[in-house]
Image (cartoon, rainbow over the protein chains, first blue to last red):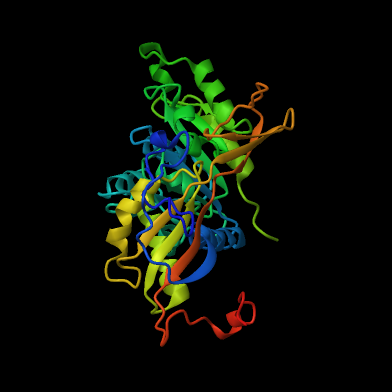
Length: 249
Length: 130
């Protein structure tokens, strides 16, 4: 450890090896110049943009829903069903590394959609959503669904300005995922268990999964659905109706 | 790899705040419960600093331990878990530390005409200036 400022510039970075304390070493080789204390939150820039998005949504009476899951959990299929059934205006921002496949599917289901391709990026951030909303122009009173990049890790840290954070898991993924990916689940407002039509064919204990979700996020709403058969979707739609932001008077 | 965009936000914040001054050392706080892997930030650092005023700077990362407080028994304790359990058995626990992600300080290259020059306002509080 550096004797001048206490930094651990040669310390091991892998968390497992750090148990029991940061390593010692001889990392005092760097010079110390003119020091300035900053105290800058690394997420402050994104959070400020998210707050701006949120104010824009609130002013237009838009309910913004951030949908997050691992790849293949059924976000897009759920959204296809949802936009077909939704009575009012709705629009979808689709986040994927590549292709416009999901936006094409949403458009075919009858809703307006804009695809955000992140390239190497593993999550949507507030700036991407702001640009996406510029292009999408959801209109007053709409429900805006933001389908995040399929990933149970990175999207957890980046607020988009959403009113509701929805995490979708499917029964093929394993009941312990809420404990393995706690950053994602501990900020969820609603957790959907999708593909329940497959329960007879997989080794998935729903009670165990619910206990894991409760452990990560006691206050989260939990719904079981099948985007394929439509089971449980009325409860999901009912919840959206309840959450829908009132248009300011 | 959200560490890439977070490391980019470090460079953005520094170039915005410090202007054209070259940065020699960047000191970050990456809490052990923050969800961010310090090694991944080190990996990205050289990449995102290339061609900026932060290029070539040393990256120092301090990793504060996780801290939590039990809402059932009121005890405070340190933890390595994002979803900690209190030693009393309760899972109704609030994380109170170790989640921070911040730039703490930088050291900059300052062009000085004589060694050990200090800012004028620093002299009045300097020790043993007699």
